[in-house]
Length: 353
Image (tube, rainbow, N blue to C red; front, side, top):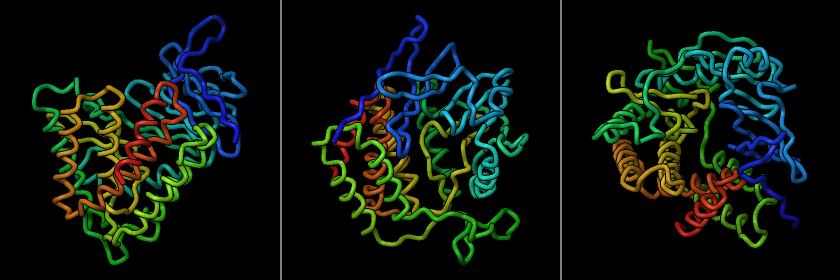
């Protein structure tokens, strides 16, 4: 099997040095989608045949609304042909392909359980390709250095308390969360994300990055081992879940309390899904050198306390954490500057069996 070449962390264009911030495999393609930092904005393009093909800042033929928005704002995120986020003042606009904004709004509407215990961004405007949200005040839980004294532990305690409240929201007979007025949300419309769905996500990421890794690495066997562990878990009641819960999605303010971003991924799942993802990201941040070990342990302790309140078996939490660690080991495998960390994550997933 031919191993495809990965892009470097720094590239040169027209005599200027640009840093590649993120990269994603393109399904059924030998290209990588890449995102660069350029003058304080994000710029999208592709890495193909050992060279970067970049689009101008704020330009994307598959996201025609982006150019207009970028003219009066800052592009803070951009994956070519897929999505972008533009900040204008204290507002953030998600730009997707035409006709796909409805899916974002449907996801937001599914997150009723979280709005009872978290502050979430208000939707200000929408059309077929854009959704604009109000900014959410608070300090990101991605950056412990911004928290004074005991505030780091207090923030995580309150955030996990809010998450537990959401997970304990009553569900109707079919399993959907009830709305605040006592009626039930449309149960059939709320996605279920069980062990089978998590297995599919893990296998998909492994397939996407396989051609970028050493063929001698037994990734496929490891994925199937973890998949078997997921499938063997005892069936648990499905509860409201975020499905992509990690530190960058969380905010906290001493006055306003917990805030939660990107709730359009809301679903019903085993509570171990969100909790395992939080634990895995705490491990990741230490490996990245972004958190100290004691800061990660504070987070893991808060996660474990939430698991105890919901009677999540430690063995189930361990399996979901292992799956999340392995998935992150695939996601970061193609990101410049992160390949060593990704390899350590995959090794950790192999050892934790």
